[in-house]
Amino acid sequence: MAYAILRTAKLKGAGSIGGSIAHALREREVPNADPERTKDNEVLIPYDAEKTRNDIESARTRSDNVEMVEVVMTTSPEWSETATPEQKEEFNRRAVEFLEEKFGKENVRSAVVHRDEQTDHVSAHVTPIDRNGHLNAKEHLGGKEKMRQLQTEFAEKVKDLG
Image (cartoon, rainbow, N blue to C red; front, top):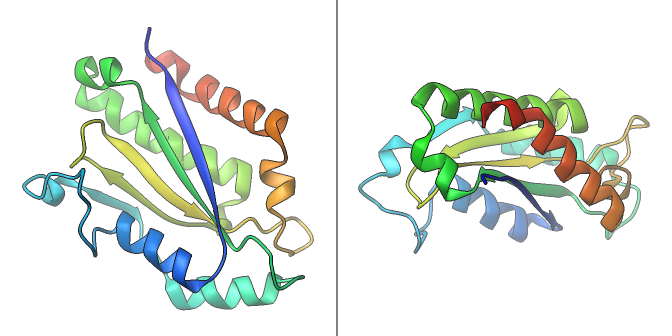
């Protein structure tokens, strides 16, 4: 049975965000990536560092706010090995659409399809800005139950792809 997988990591501070973005954009060495295949990666949403930094500062309510959430959306290897190129493209499109629905289109700051690792995946970054204009990761990610719900909703979004 194939699975849809969604993983998140909370990021605080320019160093953590910069390192995560550099990893996603392959601006630094990635040990588990095949350098011969890095050219096959695709930027779906380009990262605008200055706009993101300004938006984060405008939305800050505390000095220790979660400023960015790294989201990785992928499948189990058996699906990736048998899926058609069209199914993979549709998976990528729906992954970005899912983030835009859950976090708001304006908060999806970057999205890259990595094809240079064992299993293709979408690596994205979102700012957890709530409806009131504040950084609020808890509203989006909450506790275990909220994360479980987010993962289930993502799986439902791509379920018909196999």
